[in-house]
Length: 364
Image (cartoon, rainbow, N blue to C red; front, side, top):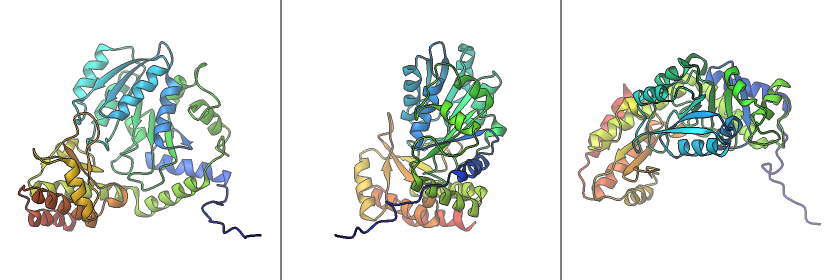
């Protein structure tokens, strides 16, 4: 009989049930919240859909901020459950203005929740989260924040801001796995989510996870994927060793250096620094150059540049400085590759000045 050569990835040990409590607590520390922390055995888009599905029902109203496809999906999931949804749509590829939210809240005083994305990886923009949450809280409205792209890249204090539901994925700034996610839920949010028609016995059920919390955060429902949870632990180990404040500062520096280098190239930054994400910097391509040509040229140098995503973003190029990419070496490589792609296409680009600008940020 042929002996089978086992791969340890196939035969990973079961994730110990007694460690889920500590894992949820560590995520709560990152989010700076005492609210319930739920673990979802799927990528963050499933956690977001679970929130919408658990809340939505006929007679339920929501104000939904749309600054990318993710906001659009959230509105669809709410409507599927019978909710009345008012979409507040930003200009393509741009952040929403807090003033527009104030006007909408005055026009629709009966909304129960307000949902928005904090930082958009699709376009590199940052929505004015503190201002928007404050507007909602002043009216007693439950707030839902997609912080998947922002956690670890931006300061996020759930309890200080008064965020009722914050959904995160560890695969971006935290440098963890994509196959598991988490969310924090306040008591105010539970009052809306635990209604008679809320889904049960489903991966989209917050009620099931509330029962898990109330039972002491032991074994999760279903069959947990151990590799994902071991990987999440390892990512949290790295974050805690570096220090969350340092992780955020590293992303801030990478963003500042990227903007400085791109500006020195003569590139057109898409949004000003105060409206920009610390994880992705976007530039508007010069007329006559296609994103595919820039992507292909950079790939030939071993550098990954990506086009903008979504309506109105086809002219944007994204420079990714998320997670492990938030380093001097990677930022410099991205800026130089973009400058070289511009020159290859016949556009002027001062690569020397750009390199000096990046180095100046990192040496200061």
